Length: 329
Image (cartoon, rainbow, N blue to C red):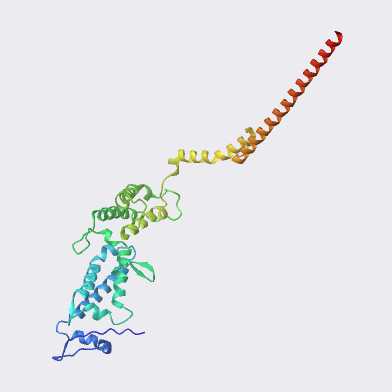
């Protein structure tokens, strides 16, 4: 389905005023129409935008390794952002330059180019998408607000000053492959510089968000990662294990405790009978009381019959004794 965007453009061509033009019928002449307008702002802005985007892409690729895009390409980024905004702020023949230049096709070359470089947080194919500049958190390297008047922040300057000292120290020592731990001369000579860089990175770059690197300027993050890799892999430097023998002994003791505890419990422990607790229900209570009541009633009835028997026996004995007494008389 083709969506035709129509608008009127009033321009001067060869000194005569054109009537309303249906732009979708003159797409191939749009470039000529814009250039022949009295002001020509749109084409000039587009040319500058194209130049700035190409310069930024070239700069970003040139400074890809080691990554220095944030520090080296900031001016190109600011210029192309300004030119992109100018497309919306300037008009020609009663229409915004952005409408003239970006509403004629589905590819959206200008929009896609800008988003690839400078998108803040857009959604592309349902996936959160950031441009190169914001994906690298380059604005975190500079003072705020970010503009032509911005400069590198004091944290950025302090980090790269210390990073330079470490790199200069590393360059004095050759790469020693498969060298024993801490045997390289760089481990002793560069230790102070490396620790100063690490402490500054931890205290001033990471700060309270310790070990969270999502918001760190990527120039700093990449420089620190490469320095740590050189220190640990190239020179095989690191902490000496003998300095932590107390910790190692404690770990070994804790690890051996289960091996000692369970055999001892198995040998010395006594088996304990499980206590089974039956939960009593109210019906059990009534049944028990009824049985107790019936038992007491049966005892009472038996005792009553026993008493009656004894009384009857006594009456019989008394009758017999009275009869015998009368007979004797």
